[in-house]
Image 1 (cartoon, helix red, strand yellow):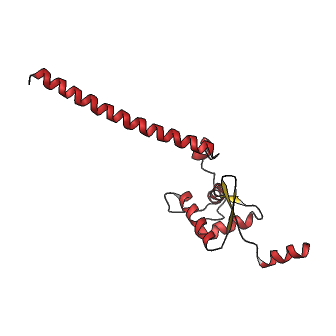
Image 2 (cartoon, rainbow, N blue to C red):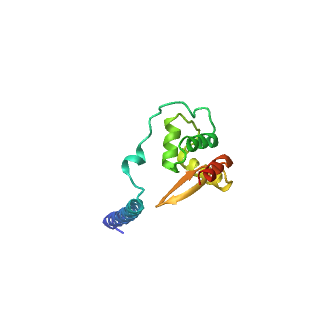
Image 3 (tube, rainbow, N blue to C red):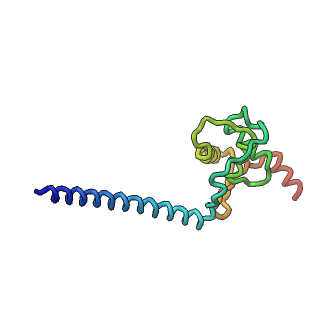
Length: 147
């Protein structure tokens, strides 16, 4: 092989490598584009909300565990049914602290487990699941009296 043959082979290998890299980047781009389209279709994608961090307004939940803080958020907003985004925002605004790297993911998990145990309930409105506390016996009796 001549030096030119070696050089041509090296360039051909480099072109193949770059084409493979370009194809991989195109695949990643298409995946992100499809994800954005799906989020928009489901009504979840709001650019501002994805990166917005609520301002801390108080230290109401600073010393509480997650379960206790969730229950307090739900109690203080009864009879409203609350989305995960609202609960998350309330926790952060009121000083809830966690060592978690992904507090929102942990919040989804905790809400799921609390619902499984019957501590809270949920209802799906559109594409958004909303959580609420079950009525206590006293609240059920008041409702019966009103009827």
